[in-house]
Length: 397
Image (tube, rainbow, N blue to C red; front, side, top):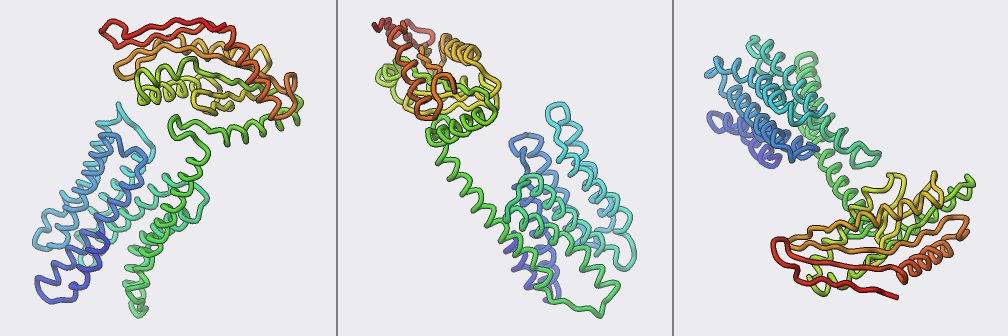
């Protein structure tokens, strides 16, 4: 849309229909680009009402800009076109209020309602009324972009700052330029000065993409790609931090090592895709059971580890371990299969069982293997609605 805007404005000085068409296409593409920028930064795009709001913004801006460009032939249509700016967003926001509500939506509704009031008050003014109205539309569109990007990227990075500042400067162009034109007409600035915010926004968006990619790569380096849980590298870092905090405050920290029973049997019998679903489900169950201050990590093929920080005690740690095992007693529906598995857990507490990271991990592993040696496991796998395809019961001694 920005490219179309630049190309169309090359023809604005042409006499007759080509000049008028160039101005109309240039303004329409500039406004639509702003609406698309704003939509790109809406944090709740998946909502159905958000799509309706997006369509309303497109229709309102498209109708008003076209009507304003063919004025005075369609002066009668300016009033209903301006009313659309207030009526459409308010109607959608109120109708969707029962199912969805967000402060950013009401900010959008408010600024477009203010735009409708402003347009109704100035658009029929003799002389500069039409220019004031069009500049108000463009200011509102790009100020809305500034607000949405600020909400979406509230982080202290160069990309966020440059993009938000660029959109604010872009919006202010439609205030400062007409102000200078009507109050200091002798002041002349080249058109490239007014286009500068567009390039600032472009640089900011490139930086945002790079920042997002760097953050994504960092996440991949520290998290298990299958379950999304911290991997062994991040787990060891957090365990070291937990031990250091416990040592400094003279408190306790606990490590739980959980090994799934007969996970290989699920993989070999039902396929790796079912095994992957099983790991994802177990990771989700474990993460939902512990506190936010604790850590659940996938530290091996079928091994999960949990770090419990203060306040905790050996009794509380064993209770958490028992509750995690309890989660696995109910059958899990994975695709067309119902799978019941068990697990073995080892609990080690700092500083009672060990006083450093390596020894604490060894203590938890040893206790887990002790539990596994005396554990009676069974796994049942069946397809719902049919007889069990197999059922194994074994005892390890």
